[in-house]
Length: 318
Length: 47
Image (cartoon, rainbow over the protein chains, first blue to last red):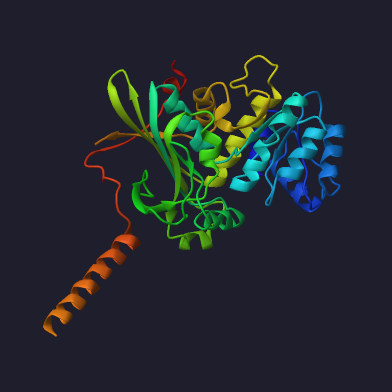
């Protein structure tokens, strides 16, 4: 709903589809403006391809923000001739979506994967710092909170299973271990974190060539049981690098509602993809399937997000 | 007997410490001073 609101707010023509038409009607009505509901249930991926063909316009872009796997929906959108923005964060799902690279290139389309908070906003922050460094040694991202009940389930899942992280080569270890303390901006403050089975390293590594890329999540997750879209969450992105002045450590953070961040990121990516051939576009992504950070200018997208209310801060001090 | 008892106490203390460290976490140097400063659009778009 938040992505719809952002897109309608900047004048995009938005068609809201859902498995449940009552849901799409409710979202379209709450957004108003140029958003229109699709009154037929879209229960199968083929239904989505049909919607794209009938309502897509000259450069249709499909934002997939549903629970569960996004792969079949993304395939259908590509088949219908659309670019795709997916808010998926599950590592297996994101891996499958990036495997659409060849198909997307062959169709001259782009699939942007992980357009949420982490992966997503965190990747943009890391890529922006990396673009200002001569060399990046390590990127560590810690996430706090979730964007609602379904997202909370996924967050709990990140602390089970095994991580998929980069430490001078791809490696894995049990998630939920390697606990350490992380300081977030107020009012979140200090939190315990543990290694997370996140898709972030996989999506960031092709863009930021760091020796170490790892993701963690705060624990315990008791608060996530009460998680709603209004619950505060946050990010801390630590980048160790080297520039002309010597070794540097940059710590960026943000505190906001994770659902708000994710919605703004997905909408900003979609807006830019849909206007790829127009003047004034902020960021362009290459053809194929990539993470958000693969865009041409992470700083420009962060600036655009700041104008839409999603702001980051840098820790200054020692 | 006394040494066995002392060893048992030492092992118990070590186990409690290990448990506390595991539950509470470690690492992450606490900031001594400073604070968070919002990034401006000019900074984000500077080349």
